[in-house]
Image (cartoon, rainbow, N blue to C red):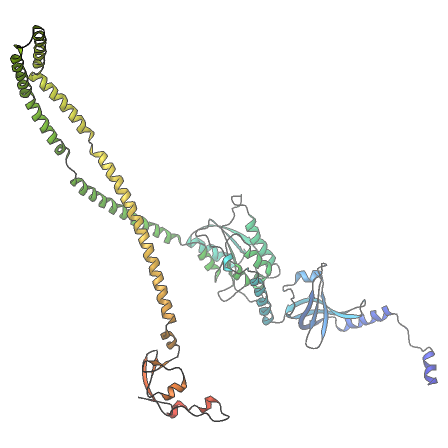
Length: 525
């Protein structure tokens, strides 16, 4: 014991190191042995401080390795790491003397295969869908014939040539091209900036604002199309005020921008077909509608002309209306002269009879009346009567001229127009009502067929009856003398063979039921 104490108190010849020297030696040893390594593991405890660096852990089922990605390296990564993603990190092992630990300085990090990318893609899709970016209520209808179309794609690829060629064939429109990188680390920021830039244009400005956007790219691998799965691109497409068509990859390729866009096209050429109609088809349709309009107008005019003729034949002639008044006037003129002369003579005779009883004063007054009667009689000459007759006839002719048929025709046309308008309105209302009721009847018929038990029979089920009674249990079926089974294609009568099978102890109900091949339950009639 004393020897041990003496040895510990006696200074040896081993060199003494400071903490910094030991830390530096360990750092040089670790960095020399692990200057370039590739590590596969799962990302855990990910943090992004304001400095722009990324701190994370790489772990497996037994160990954890700290890692750091410096700000400049993080900005160049094609795939940003996410917690829970399996990755392959490339870098160098170094130590951190301040905490006496080692860490991996990551120079490149990639998902560990397509499975990791798909898992990360599905996780991102679910998160964005939860925010409502993919809801159908957010999607806008495409304009039928846009004046200006904005295309976000690579200016040197075959995609833009296919789009322009298809637009020229269908309906030429003005096209604005915003050149972007369609893969790589520059793809996502450039595509999102292009969508935002088109939306920021002022309507009616020097450079026209597009009425429709097309984001297009040709086919490729999942890694090539990854830029269109970035969150910035998806949010820019969802927030676009201009209707947007996504045409990324081929028909089997699916990216997240397809869910956020207003319309997805399987190919860039199909996107051009969705953007504009076929000009020749529109011209043919317009010509057809013009022909139908001309035929309809001609037919309507012909029918109304015929109707007007029929109504005109029912009206009396103007001469027929004036014949009777003219005849009555002529008879009155002929009878007026003799009647006046007869009346005057009667008055004279009466005056002569009464003159003997009149006083001289009355006789004088009577003479005055006679003189006046003579003047009146002189006025009843045939010439005066003819003049009065001509005056009355001219007044009658003036009244006849006022009875013009044009006014009657105008009133008739106005009444016909009102009648035609009411007929059209009634026809439209009747057609709409019949169509609505037809759709409701068809919907009820489809519902009836869906809810009917015959549809259930087609899926492999059957209905068992005893006479007209429905059999729903095995006990009732075993007691029946005769059963009828209804299938989807008809009915089949059967006779129970041996009643219900007895259940043996310790055996399952399935084992106690005889097999149909043995003929113990049912025999076909």
